[in-house]
Length: 294
Image (cartoon, rainbow, N blue to C red; front, side, top):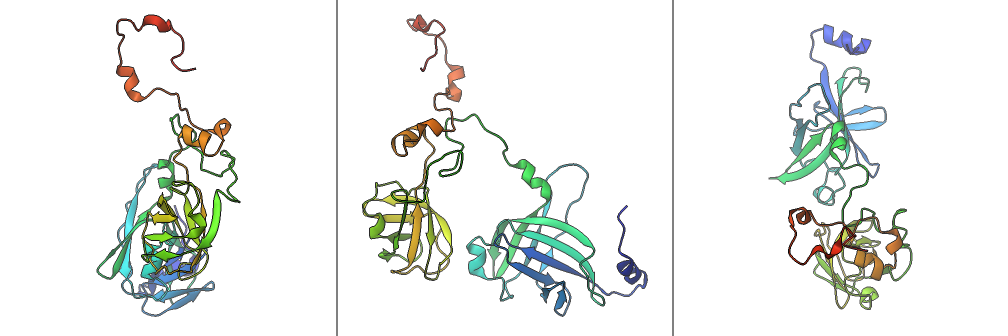
């Protein structure tokens, strides 16, 4: 049985309604936001909890076991600290949300009622709706090594071994032209092999998008880069960026483009699933049990 702190238990026994909920939101970049359903702002343990009547949390399911359960939080975009561009830039994806029951006459963060992680965030008519997931959602993610034809390593990590710190796999430059959201061209990558930066990452180092990174959908001839996700803030000529190469995780790419076949972390000669449906045909008996691929 869970023990309630003495001060909070005393407040509950008085019968007076002096309780509120406080949500402490910690983004993956370290930014901490506080929101409360109380009618005035509260400051608890150096965190300012902003009064916001539009912030609500749905009922959460609770049951024994390791099932992934969730709910939703939603609110109006009235706080100056919760900005549309930050939501669209993915700064709140994977953020930790802690909910506390607080006696606003003697505020303290000593009774934690729920811990969850923010999942998908949607915007609907000036409001945001965020899916919340409990800690067990991490068990739904793949663990260990999978037997697949494609490589399971990420380009540039310890298992891959390719060094991305210098040209030609990492380039820096400035935007020459852009449509402001989805495309840009730069002379720095104009002479690079077409497709080298497809599935790579571009990080902007100056301008309105400074510090923001996104995935490249397509690297076309002439130094044109098409982004998977449209930028929230306007991109302008002269903005600085750095870009790293991408990989489609095929053995041929690993061997021919990166000369890294020895570190390929897939099984390129593994038969496709439909191989089990094949049957013997006249004249095909010359294998005599030997491997089909050497």
